[in-house]
Length: 520
Image (cartoon, rainbow, N blue to C red; front, side, top):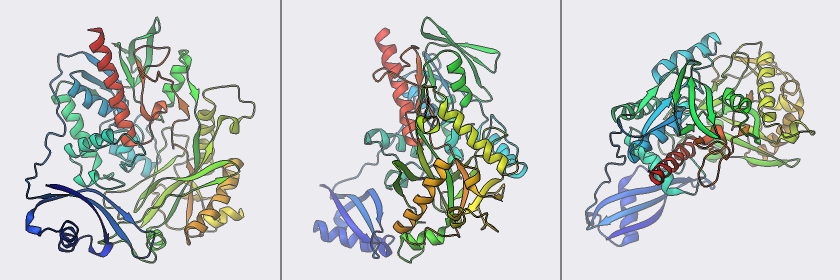
């Protein structure tokens, strides 16, 4: 027989298999020798009370053999199959390509940036020399923004089968199996590059193509359908199906589509600051005075409140993490956060952002689809100027920000390019700062100790999601006016992280497969 059961284990016993076995035997009324295999299906922490517990969902094989699931991913050689062009080698583009191999379609990826190995040099230049390569940075390059910005795999999607499949593919290409069971799975920026490289090698070995330093510079539309594209302003590529998986920071794509008369929509997004505390402080707050260690991982948090009708919430919380410079142009400053797999840095950070609608920016908004994008760009440039026209970020201690005082000094930070002490009230728009002030006080009531002058605010946190939406038909996933154009994932406004982007890429590829099957 195969049994499923739920256990609540005191945190101090989570690594004690003998203790866990005793609980299993008691619950199922069996001898441990009768359990041929114990499989963890889900694992989460309940830290609401001082006695912290782990919730375990287990599957126990009692006097029955366990057969490990293999071949989580089954590609086929597609060298001579129908081609599908994919723009972007982020999670959406890569997963679309990997799914194409299973379906029997030949994926051809064009990526404006460099491969993961070459990308590292450009990241180093941002940190040390404050030089931003607009084609190769934290956002652009093999693996997209996720490769060097944390690798959190949590998604709110209810399509659990799709989520499981996406996670299983990560495991197939080298991720730890723990991501299949943890409530908030995480790979880590230090491990992702090798996994991404393995995906690319698989695509090429099975007949697909991956081209780096290959920027989409033009799209050819004939009679309301995709006819071809231009790469690097000189290479024309014919195609009938184009998956546009460019990510939310490829602003030139929005301008290109707009110039071509392709319908776009302004999309609400969020903007604010990235807040950094010591990890010990967050541990102490969340674990009731305890610190993380062998039995407790570095603590995280999720906070939300309403201020004057607008949501203010934490975003992309990184325990034991690092604040990173994520600009994609030289004359702008952008922050994001990431964590290594062990989450063992001494700092924690999280975006804290305010919801923004187009009418908040311009009360006389006339439907301009680029309204939010232009606003986002202006804030990032203003912060670049305030930071001394370098990749140093304007920063301020939390309570000093509330009181409108320039901080006399700033705490140690994980942000390597450095900080410039300024009053963020003079840099960020008032509709942002006024709501952040209320929110920080409210968050301090929810997490005693969060509201402190030891916390430092880095500005801005501005790339939470795309400020532009590219419409698509609900059924076919094609743009309603351009047949064969498949706007995909975060850059088109249909995903919010690595996993949701990955299976949105898969969905687009599946629709192309269905269309090809019907027409053939």
